[in-house]
Image 1 (tube, rainbow, N blue to C red):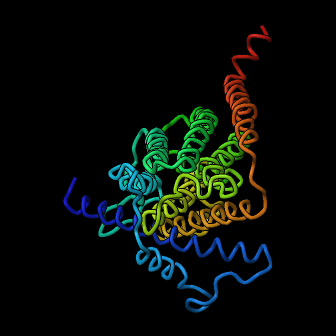
Image 2 (image 1 turned 135 degrees about the vertical axis):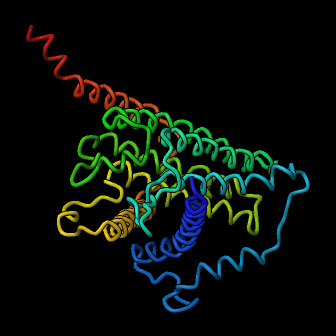
Image 3 (image 1 turned 90 degrees about the vertical axis):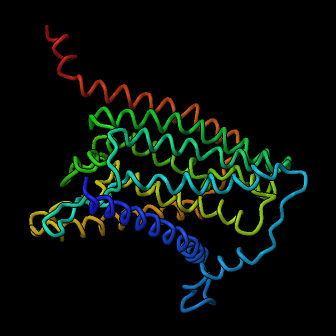
Length: 348
């Protein structure tokens, strides 16, 4: 491992981090524009041309607002919790392959910060830690509404992680690897995993909505019942961290869904017409981000179309529908993979 390789990885990690923050920041602007379009209104159009500076105005507002820390709260945990949510949201992007590899001065560099051979386990581990930021924030606020929102968030995320994990086991069975990079590389051409795991993909997408606390699964911050949910007592940039973490999770979820099921950076037929490796790598990045942006739009589209579930409906969907379906998908996947052995038993 040379010094140049280490510097390249550090630069790539910084670029991924910066792009993640930039997309999350402008996702807030895109959300309002999409909501305005779906509700037949303009959306933000005052700050800059076409309202393009609205996220900057929001950031200035959050930084300039008075910061209030309740006197009856656990001050240390109250301060740490938003940072924990934001940190875990930013940690997931390092195992996502953003493209193949580029060649510079005779040396090939991968467009993936690190290709862990247990990348899926890393993703699930980091996502599981993220619930602590919400739970700690709700508990440290010493507010009944905040605590109820935190309990809703933790039970919801744990419930839907079960179905998500089982759907991913079926994907691992078909791909034979835990490496996110290898899963993306296997989907060249039209060999997208959604064609072999359509039910698993559907379950994973539904669980991703619940994991990111997006509508119709936004029960932890249900304003009609819980004022503001787990971040009721938060103000200034601490509340901004929670909101920012939600949009980062939405971006990362779209990237993971695109990589696991929709080919990642792969697009059919492109390799037949373009033979330059660096150009193919750049186009792969463009294709992946196009899929990610459509995924983010889909998150927003669903939010402004489907009404919020009741809490009993949310739990019934997770435990009585998605988990049985994910188990069925796992059994069907195993039966298909062992079809020759099973048929040989009956033929004999």
